[in-house]
Image 1 (tube, one colour):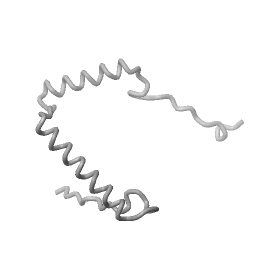
Image 2 (cartoon, helix red, strand yellow):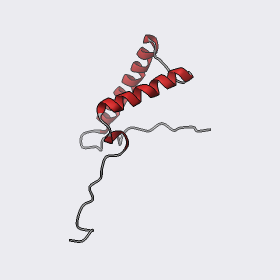
Image 3 (tube, helix red, strand yellow):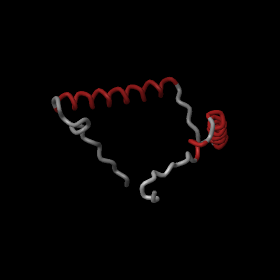
Length: 87
């Protein structure tokens, strides 16, 4: 058989190649480092409520737009994507 006919087997790389315990340990180290450097953010309960309200409002608006598009419409087609100002 030639090389073209045999599918290449890809080995997992990075986090995918690690066991779950090792992944957890590395992630914990990153979190501790972020807090130590003052770059981490912890939500208080008020911020969490505000974020959840925004998320639910966006989801409800998306579902309403999809329902208005009618059955058989492509999912997400009726939803206008917000323009991003990168200036």
